[in-house]
Length: 265
Image 1 (cartoon, rainbow, N blue to C red):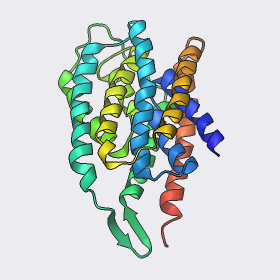
Image 2: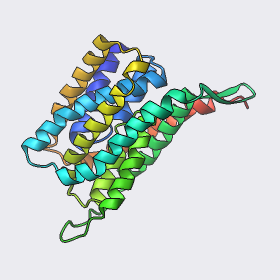
Image 3: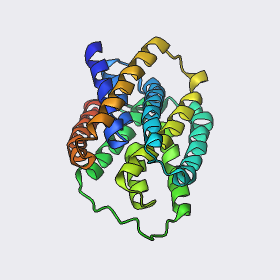
Image 4: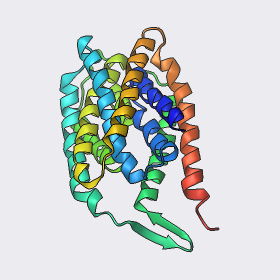
């Protein structure tokens, strides 16, 4: 199972390298179901894996002048502050059990997986559905809207442990009006800061097995370079629907396993 898990970690990187998103969508289920980490620990590990993997993609994006620094600042800075707030002042004080109904217990871990599965399903629809990309010519960008969306995605990242790429990409495409390649590159730099700050905010509250985490991250980084290489030959728009169906099936599996099968009807 561990060999399968490390192979799947390469897919995390490939997803980030190709699409600029999808890393956390794969990371958390792999850590929970293959390596048997608790959802709470998996969110922390996921932030590190996705953050370090995205850093490799960010360097490549900067090299090819694809980063939009102004958009990254307006969107990323509010996101970073909201992540820090969530990890430092909200997550540590959440109750272990939210409610009990018959034999069903809604714990924080279950709530994380439930919210995560819903996000996966919603994200899959945006990946499967074909959208017309708006032209970037002389269109006014509302940076106040970017700030608000940055705060929201930051809070979500801090709680669920996702890099937020599947939410960031549509925002950069349709609110910041960036071309797809620029949106992918810019999303990666935002994910780096979001994920690594969220990870640092959790270091004192989680025991980290560094040997495992660094090895897992190394495989994911290899996947990033594979993904960036593949992107030279295959359009990421063609791959997105395929990845979207995979994400949808994974989200449904988590709902069935974590909620439906545990509920005492």
